[in-house]
Structure formats: structure tokens, C-alpha cells
Image 1 (cartoon, rainbow, N blue to C red):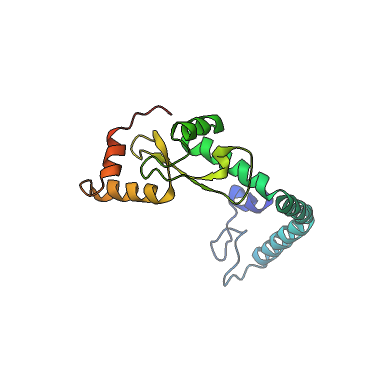
Image 2 (image 1 turned 90 degrees about the vertical axis):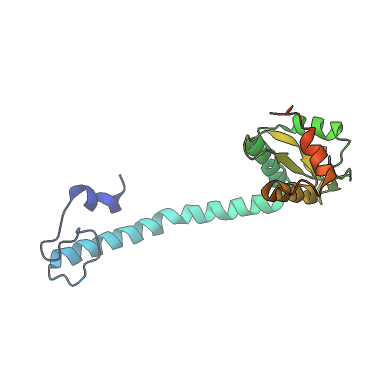
Length: 177
């Protein structure tokens, strides 16, 4: 148990100000309250001085690693976010890209390339994973503009204006999740 929470467990209440002894004394005439509080603050400051030095060294090493391996970290983040948010692996995304001919389903424009290379098309291209917000099921891969457009159409309900989006929403078959 942490030292700074001990006064709450013991339930020591100051007789003079009716506050827990570990809290800062306000207009308290009891000298023990101030002494205990000073000891607690001193202990906390000493603990921080002792224990945060290794963290500073660790932080500098971590920052050096992150600077050297910027692309590796980006790719790991992309992989993990695809898995966490949508339950998709890189192989499933590669299959979706191949099926869609590496282009957006709605506007048919090819996906733009990212500024770093990984060797995987699923990680090198800029795309948005389109999913149904009610069910969470993945519908396909879209460019960012079409993804924003489809979100707007679903939110406002303006289905009459957009032919390609209506066609896309009408032909959806949930194959991926």
C-alpha cells in the first residue's frame, strides 16, 4: 500500500480542525497535525527524487529508440489499430485491397501512397476502413473524402443526392467481420 494513503486507512482525525491528519492543516492549532503533514510531504518529495531518476534515463533511451525507428513504430501502430478497432489483420486488408483493385469502392480513384515504405500495400496506402457504426461490421476500404461523405450521408440522411454512395450502401455484403 502506498505511504501517502495511510492516513485514510487509519482514519486519524485532527481534534482541532476535524480533518484527516494527512491533509493540509487549515487554521489548525494542533502542532501534531502540521508535523505529520510536513513529514508526509518530505517523504513524498524524497521518494520522488529517489525513484524518478531511473525513469528519466529510461525516457531518454525510449525517445532515442523512437527517433531511430520512426517508421517501425508507425507501422506497428497501424497494424495494432487495425486489429484493435476493426479486428482485421494485414492479410485481410491485402485481400480487400486486391479485391477492390487498390482503389476506393465509391469514386474508383486509386489510394494515395504514404510517405514511408513498409513493403505491405496494406500499410503503404492511405485509406479509411468503412464500417457500420451500429453493428461494427466492416463494409470496405474508402478514400478519406468518400469516408467523410458517407458519414455525412448517414448522419443527415441525404440519400437522394449521391448515386455512388447509395449504390455502395445497397450492395454491401459483410464478408470481413
